[in-house]
Image (cartoon, rainbow, N blue to C red; front, side, top):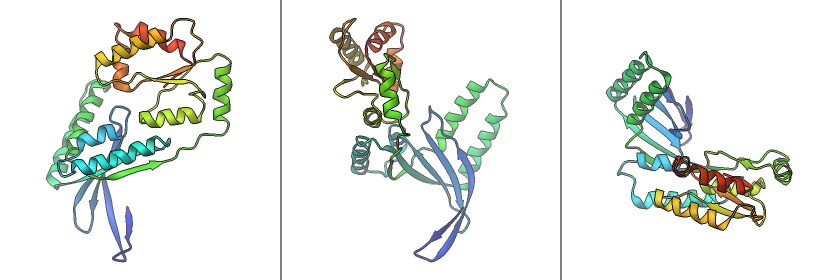
Length: 249
């Protein structure tokens, strides 16, 4: 990689030593690069705020975190997709030891699921103690005719469920843009911080929207809460409520 340093009017060359891929569990990806001029090795990581903030070191103040989080939440409420960027310099020995272990795990004769879990666990070792660089927000425009198509499907009585990796605020705004959340519909958020809170919300929705209800509403639930919702103790009630809704996110 060659980058032009406009202040010094000089090209700086970097080599990519490793790429840590994105997946739906990690919700982040990293590049490990080496500056050929200084021999400094840097880990560059980008990902969802919910996974990136816990990886930051103490060098990032609470004020900095709060400011960036506020900006990201504002962007998400506009339907923009957000990311956090962070970095950390590592010694050559730390990188080589880390890479050696990656090669070792990759050669293990074990099932792929277990190998992937071991790799994810080891990837994280070099992605911790990061320094916050900043956040970004981009607009991912809807394809032509998407809102009308979804609206027509829902008019035909088809329930639509959407699984997305977006922040909840972004998902809700995009849901409105594409008419997944219909005008005048109630947006019922099941996402909860605790299991007991989820149970209370679920019971409240069961009481509010009885079987045969004509009320129009959309259910919104995040990943951690979905784990509770799919537990056999609550799954029947959860799906019963969702089947009374017009859409789920």
